[in-house]
Length: 488
Image 1: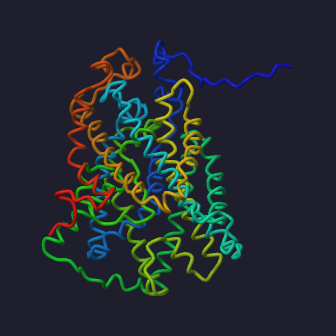
Image 2: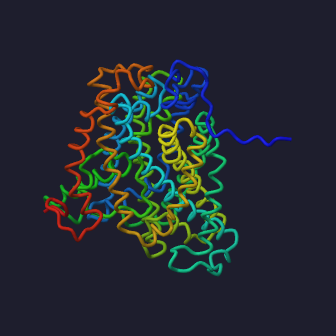
């Protein structure tokens, strides 16, 4: 019996998009056919509720209150920030609904076929990096869950050298959480909507229960009586810097975020390129593009509510346990009930899983697929992203490589101009009209100059340039850069 080796090339059925263009497409890169468009209005609502409920949103208020503003300013900043973000998300997601193609394919219209690699590679690097970091955060939730079941797990003897930045029990938790993600990496985006629906029900119920605990046990704590401690121009700069931080941390919308952002980011905050990956999901839509407008009122309400839960729970924990814990795992670890600790940590584990799939692994998969379309499909791309996360040794990054972590945090600023260029290109430059077939024809109208749209490159350089001083300062605060720091 002759052993048949697996085919390294992925499936590519005959289609008008693949004809003579195998280098630039495969089955998963082609526009989604009508019979595979499964996402309806409820699917997208569940997706965004799922995406909103994560530890980063919980911790938004921490850096705002830390600079001298009160909880009232914190709530208003989150609401206004996400109102701005929601508008751009709606605009950027509309192209996916109209043409049913992913971000890497749509970027060819703006950048050219070879020029699109600037956007694709930038996003792929960021997505893989934050997949690794988010997996590490998920490992911390698993450690709390296992410690609730077997308290001795928390005192498990450590056999890993201290220099590695991780203990044995945390490494076990990392492996468990990483393995728990693998089945979902094999799932098609059409099937993932059921994960998001489940998360959009389970996690909100758990976090509302935490909110009820906060008010019943302490009345919400004393943080609600805290007054603003900064005034005058310092107050204005703190307010604007915090708003830029909220917008930048979640959407990489503002190209000047690092120049304004001097204040520390919450330790578990994950920079998520939401504006650039929206088309990766909206391409599966079976409803009208007009439903994209739903995000404008919905996102500010949901994100603001979650930030309020974070404020109330952390404040209650401060009054009850004597220290302010913005890290939800540190707060939950103080609870006396082992069952409450387990289910509380489970809700954050599910939150981390959902956002890692929706924001990181699928983004990386689409980008890797666009780089190597003949050998990588969406499933292989997600598995490759997960495997590469081990190579990044995220526990060492979080334990010791502060400068590198700051570099990757600030690196997200490059996605701001990318998102802006693509939005303006479709809605203004091309007057809301793309040629679907030409997006797959390297010698077509989107070839530009040798496959590169020099206008997009120029706009990108101009958009990034103002952020470079802050980018440098974020990596090494000892480097003095004019205009960066605390403004009077």
